Length: 162
Image (cartoon, rainbow, N blue to C red; front, side, top):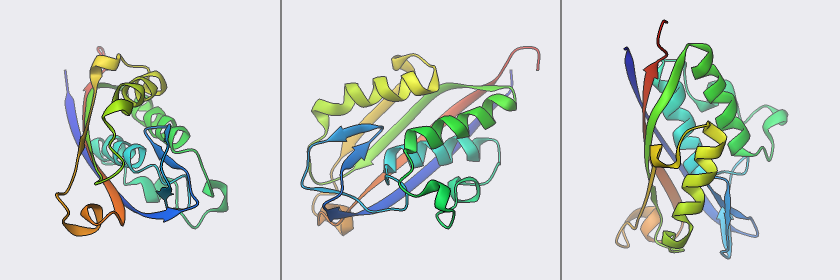
């Protein structure tokens, strides 16, 4: 079997009046993430990890923020489209490990829903998706509550017979 590892990262500023969406789950909070799409930093980091694992560029090269088709796009849809690129190369996800960095809101109660939502959209077991939430201990834009970021790593396995 051939394996490929991809790493992804994303950061978006927080802004009042926007919904907060992480991993496709709407989180009740007074601020949401700014961006051309729904600005789901978790989906964006996983998308970059998937695309990067096969050296296919990055999220901006496939879904540019200059393209009006992606204005307010659902980042889960972009993630599914990225995974279809991976599948077209005869690879599948072994696992995803991701970390969301945000001082607030506390995300623990949403982690299982996020894992399930990602698993459903990527056609993998929930056990293949690990999501962690960390604070930045008051440091940097995440720590000051100005932004959220996410890091993701994916392991891909080439389909048997490829």
